[in-house]
Length: 479
View 1 (cartoon, rainbow, N blue to C red):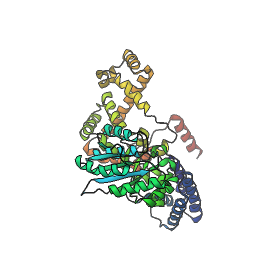
View 2 (view 1 turned 120 degrees about the vertical axis):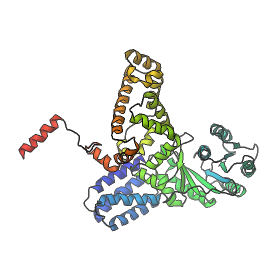
View 3 (view 1 turned 45 degrees about the horizontal axis):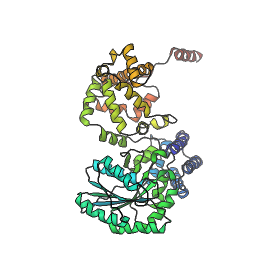
């Protein structure tokens, strides 16, 4: 998500970071490029003008801080204004403590309301709540059946009532919630156009009957700034409390997300990226601004990891890594856990500094299935002791996984390289309690900059080739 605007803004930053000072002229030039980047991302024109004016004003009026370049201060101003543009603070669900919290979903046809209902139900069930899904979409064929299937997949009950109107279904679902001892009732209403007065009146009737604590506008991220006009009309008829952005993984521009809050005052509460039912997360303006600027999102990455990786298993794995006992069986287990966290490219984009490097790189999750198939074709003994895999064994493994022997060789080679790296990290004390501070320092921006400029984790510069040394010696002689 946001690949287009991230690339454009990073070009602006590269041009500004080289400036010794920020003058009115070079700030104006930078803001023209920022304006172009936002408009190309399909951000609402009024939002663009307001954002550019604020950034330009702050950039020219900011005080110079010793040790911080004007270019770095400019990036900070853009980041701060992006956070404000996206809502400032995280907006969470206002849970009702006295009765089941009713959450009503509304929006256009095809925006993903039914799937979003299932995703929210699964998320809250994992958080210890007891959700109830309510099938109130009687307009779309098979909508009720779809919600039943989703409910069965995630283990959440679905309330249906054949032949009843959406208003009756939603009203009666409150009694069903008491029987199920549910504390979250999710109303999946039918999609509708905001110009359809009859259907919009029906939504208002549902609101009065069910008295929802939250009314979420489900918005397809791919419709860009058109989402603004639609959200305004829905807000005119209903007291919207938030929005859920869907299909964020299919939108490289981000115009809808960047326009919605500023234009309508409706906070984004959830973003969904991916078809899997666990592919939804709370919307954090500061983290999203960091992603947009290519700075990564380590906090969200850690939160994802905590949900799928068992702490005891992680500690046991650290011990194995420290002793250099990590084998292919462990690697297969770890790969499965990582894949549960989401698409690999999305995870890598959350790591600071990797976003720009991955531009144009096609990271296909199917490649990881290829690795899994090769390892699964090995015997338990071969996984635990890869050194015994000879030519005959490689041929058998390749045949069993439907791959070529060279693919098996490549996998084993990469695995051995990885073991060497973890061995070096172990000698540094990274995997021990005493070396935790070293691990933090090794991952700090300063350390990463040193590595990028030719310095290793040990602090020494990489040795050049013989040709490079000769060239350096010739330069010295000329002097």
